[in-house]
Image (cartoon, rainbow, N blue to C red; front, side, top):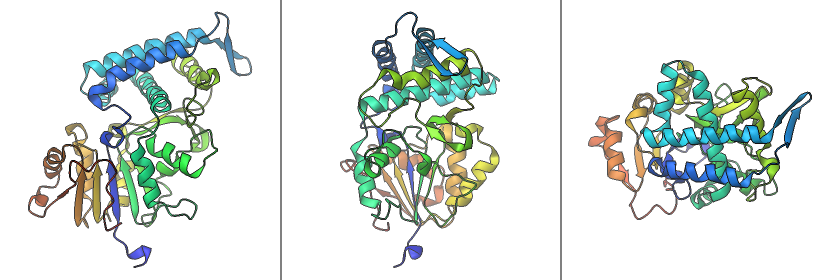
Length: 341
C-alpha cells in the first residue's frame, strides 16, 4: 500500500503524555514553588552587576531577578487557588486585564523551560519518535497528524536530540505548523495552546532559557528571560519585537479554528494519549472532533481510560454503540502505535 493510500491517523496529546516528568494540575503548585527557589539559588548576581542586551540599554540583573521571583510567587498562588491556570487567564482576559495575561503566560513559559532542563524528557517520546520517523531526514509519515493541548516542549526536545545531536538550542517549527502554508496530505502538528518559547520576527522561535537541550545551567542562560521580564513586562517597552508563544485556544481567532478543523477533517483513526477532554475545552474539542466526518476507529490510552471514554462520548454520543478501543491501563510505558499507522 502506498503512503497516499494509508488511513489518516491523528494523535491528540494531553498533559498525561508528559506526566512521567512534568506535573499535572494537582502537582503543579509544588513544582512551581520548587522552580522559584531554584531560580533564587542558581542565579546569583553582584549588587552592581548589569546586563546590556542592546546599545544604550542596560539594567541591574538583581532588579530583573526580583521582578521574576515576584511573578513566580503569583504563578504559585494562581496555580494553588484556581482549577487551572488557563481558566484564571481567561478571567483576566474577559476583564480586559491584558497586561496581567501577558505576565502570566511569560512566567508559565519560564517555569516550563526551567522545569524541562531540570527533569529531561519523558522517555516515551524518544521511543515513539524512533518508531515512526523514517531515516529520510527524520521525516514523519504523510498520513500522520498531531494535535496537542500541551504547551511543553517534550516532543521538540526529544526530536532535536534525536536528529540534531550536537545542537544546543531548540527548533520548534516542525511541531507548530504554519497553518497558512499547511497541506492536508502532509504531516501537520498543531499546538492548540501555543508553546513555551519566544516568537520573534519572521516567526523565528527560541527558548526562553538558552541551551534548553543541555542539562547544565550557566548564568548566561538566564539573560534572555531577565531582559524580557525587565523591558517588556516591568518597563513595558517592546525592545526586542518578540513575545511569548503561548496562545490560549479561547482567544484564537475564528479563522484559526476553522483552518484546524479543515486540516483534520480527513482523520480516519484517532489516538488519544493522556488527554481528559476537560469541560473547559469542550467547545473547541467538539468543533474539531465533530468535523472528523471520516472517523472509523478511536483508541484511548490513559491511566483512567473509562473516564476519558465517558467524556469523549459527550462530544460524539453516536460512538456509544460503535465502540472505542481502550488501551490496557497496564500498558502506558510507551505511546500506543495503531496497526493502521
